[in-house]
Image (cartoon, helix red, strand yellow):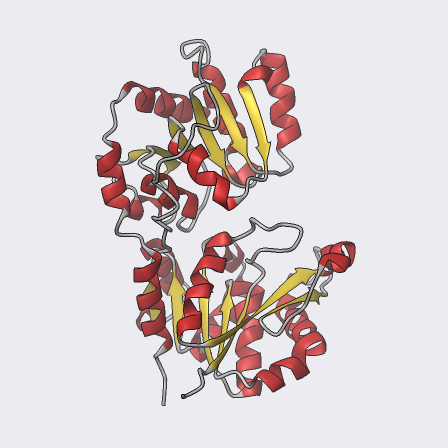
Amino acid sequence: MKSKPAMVIISNLYPLPWEPNRAKFNHQQFSLLKTEYQLSILVPVAFPEWFKHRRQIQQSDELRYLPYFYTPKLGRRFYSVMMFLSLLLHSGWWLKRQRPEVLMASWAYPEAVATSWLAKLYKARFFFKVHGSDINQLAQVPARAKQIKKASQRALGILSVSQALAKEMGNLGIAQNKISVIYNGVDHQKFGVDSERPYSEPYVLYVGNLKADKGVMELYQGFAQIAASQPQLHLVYAGTGAMKAAIEQQAQRDGLKLRVIWLGSVAHDDLPAWISHAQLLALPSYAEGVPNVVLEAMACGTPVLATRVGGIPEVVNEAICGILIKPKMADAVAQGIASIMQRDWDRAAIKQHASQFSWQRNQQQFLEMLEMGKS
């Protein structure tokens, strides 16, 4: 029996022992590659986090975590060099023993740049995946953009999660014929199945990091505007992050503290029930690639209120699935929630629309991309 070729993926976007729900979409996607490759994952962890949680880390041949040393807020143009050195110092000999035929990075900077150098060193075929802010934000700095473009010239293929992101890479001078647009998938056997209602009151659901650029404050402000006209409606946040305290304080001042529910980090297996029974899923982000939670909501038949940014308009059919609004506008959030609440949505039609986003299709397209440059 012919042995499978070795493949190593390098990415900070992967579950951590202390953050098991982090980037579950990558975990699901990469696992599918095991049918054709002997797969290993290298996860760089910022060195303060590494030392804080090092006793929770268990290394294996399939999954390794390494400390990524860098100078916080200084010399960011050199982060790719620091990533390269961190990878070599911690896992250089391990990589040599793996004898990878394929090296892939999942994040443009600094991972893709550093991995392009490793691929040259280990004579491996090189690919990388981009997600959203790694191109839309990080690549807007000329020094980083130049490095990403150079890495793209070494790459045999680049996976983009949306057409919008592929277009943005074209604006950076990255060759379009190297880019494969492959949408993430959904586990339809998990999302969209019957489940018990997890909360008795009607609710608007947010799932994700509680960060300002996810629009979590605008979501609360929009909810507050329509709270009096929807006296039974609650706002549920599933996630953790820095903005929780500010939202809590504002809800206290507005007399809405009891109508804002905090779930903290929710296990991925528990999300389908919360999403399925929500009146709507709200994600008013300032910028996105294609957020998996939007695909998961549609797979559950739940209407979506999201911003018209990144690849979201490519996957959300407003005639069937929800409403898209401008970012950074609490008034638009309020109007969107009210409009969705007033409409009788065809949940079966939403599910049908979502059926095109499957991990099986993603796997097929991903494996086809990895065939590029094979001798």
